[in-house]
Length: 307
Image (tube, rainbow, N blue to C red; front, side):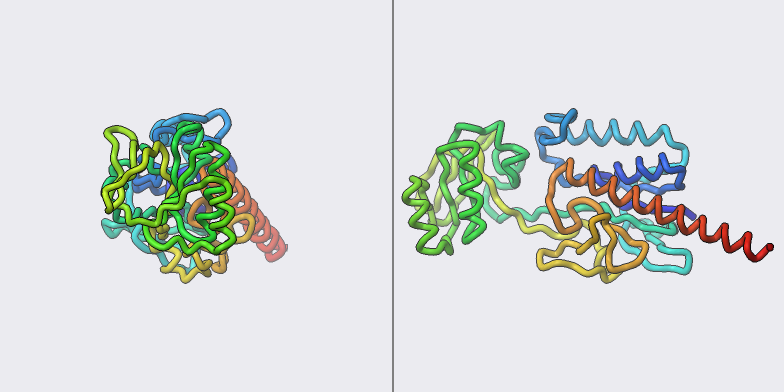
């Protein structure tokens, strides 16, 4: 029986485990070794870790957690979970089960890319989700936004931070308002509504090719993948979700299920490494406090009965 079970060993789960380990809690951390940022050529925006490979970050983090004998790390995939009298029970792919008083889900999201030739191969190598993560490396070069509607208008304007040469590629009708289109024309931003045939490049994105045979040079294409929960745990516990399929939480990661917390990309909010780590710290710290208060209350009750 663990004090806390943490599902997911990305920045959120690793940080939560560190906080709880240092708070003398007995922790089980489950890692399926399928990080969302597997294709990244370097993490960015995390001070002191800028440019570090995700695999290196995970290795250093796990090595540091090894200093805490009260933190157990399991390389295993959690498939479901349930509430039990003691708190929570999770079940692994191989059928083994583990129980904990509290549960932190830090398993993140999965990105489902558009079915366009070259997207998967060049994911992280010119096809990106976030300019704050990868915009610096392609600054002052031809860039493109692969969005539609209001989101497209917002991202195009944002991307001019990194380059004056930005093209909006909508792969069909742009869904822009007349005013949005007028502003893009006035700013010299091309709007290409032709269907995309493929993206090309050897080790890095070089161009976008349309079905009519035309193409444009492009060193960074920023797209918005469909995002889904990486595990079925939120559904298993019937957590309250937002319209984007992310778990609604309190500022410290609390969910609609008492004792169940969500930290990192799986919860509603921003998505990057440092934000996920911060969310893990918030959840870990609050769960530690909650356990301490429960233990203290039990101690008081026990002493009162004896007296």
